[in-house]
Length: 114
Length: 110
Image (cartoon, rainbow over all chains, first blue to last red):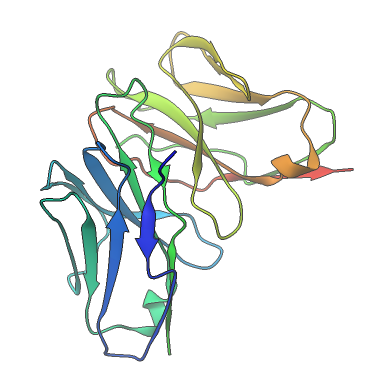
């Protein structure tokens, strides 16, 4: 079965640079979520989209923005990167039509800011 | 959003049944209780979800008392591969974000 695809899997950036993370949800899923997980920490919800519209907003910094495109893929844009942005970034997708609306997580993008 | 409280860590031995309890005192009427499992450097994985009473699937059972202010995830006969962090989440099923609180780090010993 198709899973959530994230790219790139690893990314190394310098401070103050920008980064773009991509997420391709499971086909026919209508909701995409973004999470940030720092070393030894729990996943922190950043933002979600339902049918290409922003649905909920969590602890996403103002330096970050995200959008969902017409083909349902989503991108997380990160600017003025800081050392503290080094983390695993997970994308998840779900469908409200499914009984449990469970979130299916991708493999994550490991961002390292030097 | 409902806040959840779980034990920080638990130890168990292979073959034992493990019960992890989560408190969610301010759960809303339309909130569901969902449990996820996470291995290091991997995304969380759905285990089970319930609204009330008892739910069972092929990997776990979820017990929810009538007041729904707590829930217990039961893992029968754990193995070493069940060593992971387990998260209890509370939220509705309309795409509302689920807040991952501090999970329970389960260590299964041989």
